[in-house]
Length: 190
Length: 99
Image (cartoon, rainbow over all chains, first blue to last red; front, side, top):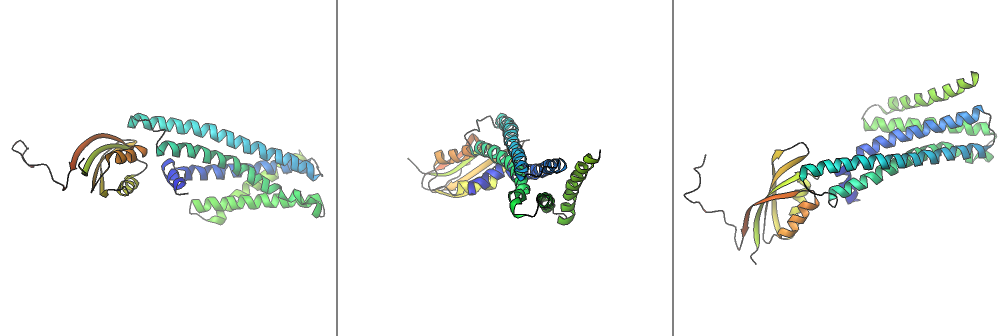
């Protein structure tokens, strides 16, 4: 843990991990809102279909985040380390700095993959309990409610990062979710 | 072999790990009693540090390893004191006038 904190200080993992987490969790929730609204508008009434389309989306987003962040972050970190090596005129790959750089790639890639995967998965949870609910519409409403709650939580998290107003920040995030739901709903009218 | 009592090194190092961490790491070494690190030049990504280490039995190999492990490169060994006590260099007529 101490080592990880040291790596975090050297490779400045905290800031970029926070940014990736917020951005990708937001992406995850909004994408799953799209999937849910699509299913709702298409009048899908079998929870298994919603779950399978939702889970496929979660997995695709997770893999996309993991792969994308791993490749871009390792390219950026390598370039950064190479640049530092030209200044110090030494090979830094086997030093604490090199190890911190490699750890940063793995941590950031994991966060980038897990954030959209988990945030979207949480939104899908009500569909696992459709059998216990009066009708599937309740699962849709609960899921959309959870998505908005997740967006609010994410906004509050960003509000805490910026030391701003948590509620205002949360409401800004919810607005994005509402706009997305509204536009999907209007599609049906077109 | 005589015991190393003081080492003065000229080191080029990246900003991170900071000199605070480096000083703490070096002062934790066996045979080291005190460490002083001062920065005399700052570049865009690196800084030049003068590291002074005093102790009862300093291991140069271990000091070198710690500095390199933290990304530093020893450019020169500017002063060494070994033996039973610490002495400064003796004044000679060739020394420039102070000031």
